[in-house]
Length: 198
Ligand SMILES: [Cu+2]
Figure 1 (tube, rainbow, N blue to C red):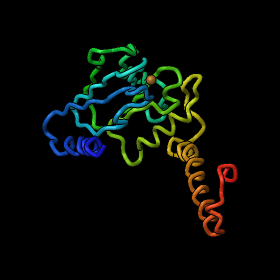
Figure 2 (cartoon, rainbow, N blue to C red; figure 1 turned 120 degrees about the vertical axis):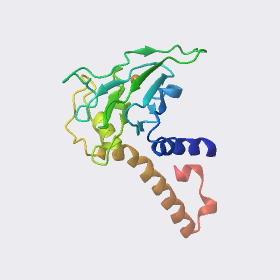
Figure 3 (cartoon, rainbow, N blue to C red; figure 1 turned 90 degrees about the horizontal axis):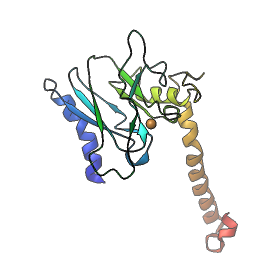
Figure 4 (tube, rainbow, N blue to C red; figure 1 turned 30 degrees about the horizontal axis):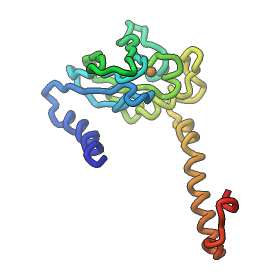
């Protein structure tokens, strides 16, 4: 665990350190059955090659826009699209991959066009900025209409949906700790049973 965390942090630092050399960046798609790109966002220079390795299920990497995360980029010209990449559950050969060469310095936005995946947050970004962050892009994806991918009413800059989903677990943990503290104060720690706690 310690080693894998270090390598995840080190990769972008190395990419930023050697500006002149062309970088090769690998992004895992749907690893372990997840609806996610790993890493979900990368920093890249013009000429760098991002290779998407499709690990499971049937995903795509499809270019969209910050304003409409779950709709394919069509104007002024159709954007990058890997197309659907079905992967057998018992795959033993190297996973299929598709590469994308970074051609601009401005942010690039992508999503999975499999039904419902984008709205569940399966999005990816190259060179997101402070103003147009990956978190804001993903929040806008979460707020999009699952039926047709059109943008939702929530602002792209709002991170409220993500907070709302994490909220109950945090409150629950705090409530549990407070309850235990209260029982200790009351001196009933030794007397509480599973039935009393529930
Ligand atoms: Cu997908």
